[in-house]
Length: 268
Ligand code: SF4
Ligand code: SF4
Ligand code: F3S
Image (cartoon, rainbow, N blue to C red; front, side, top):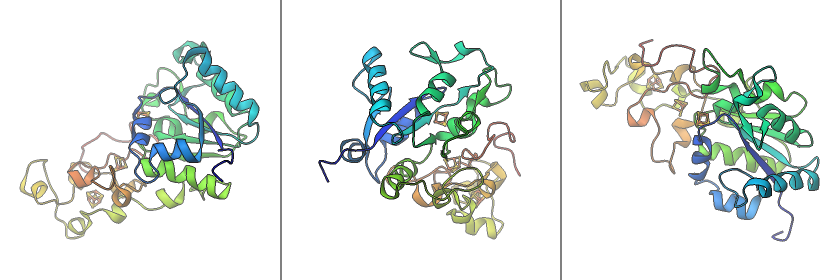
């Protein structure tokens, strides 16, 4: 098995902030080194590959040709749509939408990592000067899995990928294209402050006695009741903590339009 050819993965980065890749590098359930040394062949990734410039582009084209129909494309970042100025975001002299459509043409499927790729995220926030789109707005003839979060939980990225490697198919998805295994429940369903919510014990400011006692952050703008993600159960940094666990309300980062939905930190 060790001699078996590892599945090819091409990772494209567009209008993004590097946070999604930073998150992946913190994965403890399937650490990154285990993933790229034993499970996949990461043939193209701006930040993680040794090659650069023309050599990097040649590696991407070779991976597409050698693995036509079988490689996975992973995308982080939003993409200026075809009607946008192509110069808003380019890689190797090509617009992001051209680069995306060319690369996914022979892919078996596409994983949109992070809220920017899944739903447009920050680049798409009003007034969206670059015409930023989600991957699924542009890729309509391939299976697309959305792994939103700003950034997504590292174990969610590796978990979805390993599911595909194990079963040859993506996991079951919800209406937003997210794996139900990770996004089926709300933050509120498993929040460690939930007992305080049920007993109507709320923090009213970030430094009052309720906040110090770990009470519910609903009145500080927590969107946990309407946000679907696994932060409360998987947590971050090998289960160290998560936003609400460390005293910050959930901002709803794994839902569509989270930047424009409501003002942050407003009582609801
Ligand atoms: Fe950065 Fe968040 Fe977009 Fe990922 S989803 S690229 S962390 S802004
Ligand atoms: Fe729900 Fe947020 Fe309160 Fe937790 S802090 S119980 S997620 S409203
Ligand atoms: Fe995002 Fe809320 Fe989790 S802001 S990181 S979904 S706790």
